[in-house]
Amino acid sequence: MVLNIESKQDLEDFKSYILVEKNFSKHTAKAYYSDILSYLIWLDNERCEDVNFPKVREYLHFMQKFNYKKTTIARKIASIKTFYKYLHREKKIDANPTQNLISPKRPKSLPKFLTTEEIEQILSNINIDTPAGYRNRAILELLWASGMRVSELSGLNFENLNLEHNEITVFGKGSKERIILITDRAKNYLQGYIDYARPLIAQEYNHDPITDSSPVFINKTGYRLQTRMIRNVINDIVEKIELPKKVTPHMFRHSFATHLIENGADLRVVQELLGHASISNTQIYTHISMQHMKEVYNETHPRA
Image (tube, rainbow, N blue to C red):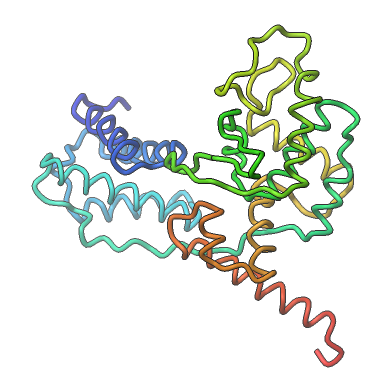
């Protein structure tokens, strides 16, 4: 099914709107773009200005055939509502057919996290006798010490490092800049990687000298280490030590937040460190801590 010229233009303009004006992350913008593309194809060349509320409801019933997760349904509805709100704002339609459409509440599941013992087990099983192994140790130390997203870590350049003050500047969702803090231990591994391991990782390839815009973490060909490779590193270690749970890079971020709150950190401080736009996103970690506390209580109290 090929979109008509008008729909194509609306879709491209909408993409620019959510990226530039709404400041959506590339990942979110890609999902919204895909959602609206599917919707426009379903409309089968019916013009957006001719769509009414019953037509939108018809599409929602159509989506139910595919057994999407509740979170996916919620996002697709949000995409359509944002799309029509944009069209109405731009006066491309006279009325917004989704104005009275109620978005379902997205079910919030508690993020999975690692205990301190599990993280130490993972870290201690990295072979740091090789340049790549030392790099991997520095990466995981940073993820745990800072709570940064794996995409933020992959995107680090040398200009982002202020190791004298244990600070790193990262650019999170929507390219929002924030400063994160790291421990002395993480800093020492990072400095050791930069001084000794990094020059050996891609020594067979001739590359330009390090500049402010050079990537911090590189692969064996000297180019920026991608997030997929970091996931593979974690998978290999977890498989090696036979840890009985699936571990992702994001679990280090969840663990960072959970451990801070368990040890009494202020919720607003954790929000800033994680780069959450809303404190409600951070509050979920208080539920994890409470759940963990109950589990410990039930396991250890003699009368429980």
